[in-house]
Image 1 (cartoon, rainbow over the protein chains, first blue to last red):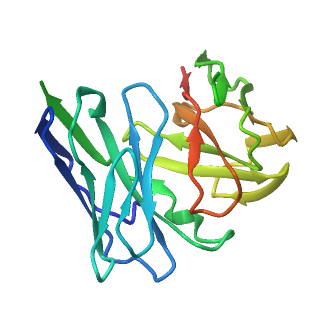
Image 2 (cartoon, each protein chain N blue to C red):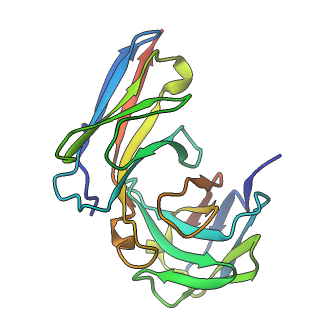
Image 3 (tube, rainbow over the protein chains, first blue to last red):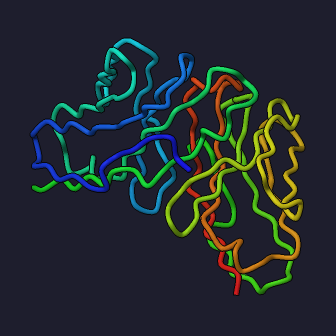
Length: 114
Length: 114
């Protein structure tokens, strides 16, 4: 089973910011928080990842709670191309072991309205 | 150019048959993976290879046998196919085995067992 909890679906309007939440209360000290997204009929695509500090890249921002038990993916200006299923997963630091955490749950289906 | 490619895209076959799915990456990555996405949309890791060596072998029936002839290729052979094997299979690659590396996914192979 996935080790993260996300809302099943969210809706946004084009050009507006979107905040996608993820709860991961069982996170361990060395787990990374990764976000991927999956467009219809495609493979998952990396979005962003972080450990403790907030992270920004050209696609999105990742805000990580101080206790690391939750995080929020922020799309600053949603476009129609951002409509996808967004997955939040925990990835263990160690190269072996912990791979049971690599389960992409159902994710959050983001709908972007024009 | 496609970074991670899989063939075939669709595979329909009868129970009991043996089939293979091929995967190639042209990113120069050391590590490759096979994931299975079931009907409930959960995506779980099956295998991981690093420089042609098996690193991760999750609880997968031994009817599934991955083969890595070189670090750019990771093929998946499935013997005695069962109805429950119907799923979408994704190949992925990353720079190294460290879990905080970004994974690049292929487009997926939809396997239907009749």
